[in-house]
Length: 413
Picture 1 (tube, helix red, strand yellow):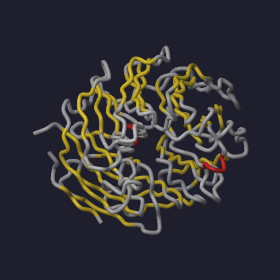
Picture 2 (spheres, one colour; picture 1 turned 135 degrees about the vertical axis):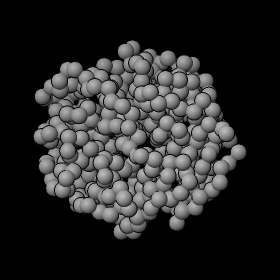
Picture 3 (cartoon, rainbow, N blue to C red; picture 1 turned 180 degrees about the vertical axis):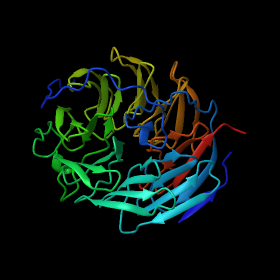
Picture 4 (cartoon, rainbow, N blue to C red; picture 1 turned 180 degrees about the horizontal axis):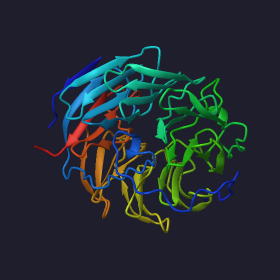
């Protein structure tokens, strides 16, 4: 069910499994593509020539009866998956629901990927290719245990997804047949102290891989329970390198030039060499990091569960500035899970305090902040079509407040 609401006024430097080197020259700069999670396979969150609203106001809102994943936008349509098996297509100006496809025997959790006339979605049963016009299935690919925490990576005619079965699957986009499969369990490193992998994996599953990033020839996979990132050759499925951290890894990597940026619950942001996986530097925060990274103009932007949002110089690994979000009534900070997007002037992200923030990149001061749903939490990564900042809000299960909603924030009229 859906309803529409009117507008509201110490770094681990060891590198394991180094093998074939990745070409030294970095991937070419890609145009921001809102039809793919974080703006493209590299997951940079860099808006390129697109701007963000100089002032922010909630322009439209849709409420749902199920939790929502991260949204993507293609040709004026927002696509978002629901936790109870629905896929929604909504006009990016919030004017109408275009279509809704219900699959009650399946569960979705992460962002879909739009490519050509298809939508690719990972589910608790595997991977599906759906028609953009109405959501009819073109093909289904089964993965034991599913892959519902992985946004599909589309590159070179293949759709890559990592599954709870402990494997990376490369599927031919044309017909859903398998191109290759890589086991990511047999070479898993020992867990870091205090991080029991059994507590990080859903019972009965082999691993808990998350969303991959790619430079076009290599896929970079964070594996939550194994506390490491693995580089995989896209064409062959061969492992190139594997680099451990000291904590579980939730967020997607970001690829920029010769660097790969990853975050970890060991309270750190890492900058890795794209060719070898060797750590160039690490940046410490006050608490675990679940946010991905936006990279633009020589800076990395990300949030932490310490309630701070950071701008870090990617050459030095030193902070340019940090912004502290307000504390709750209990005196504690709200965590930031949202992976940001960044323009020349602004960096935008959501917080569990219920606000979507836009900070000035120059000094970290607040350009605007909007609380789109009273009592709700914003953990999703925002996306923009150049007009609206679009995000999902979730119902606060502990406080029993807020709502599951898709919102559009734009310039005040």
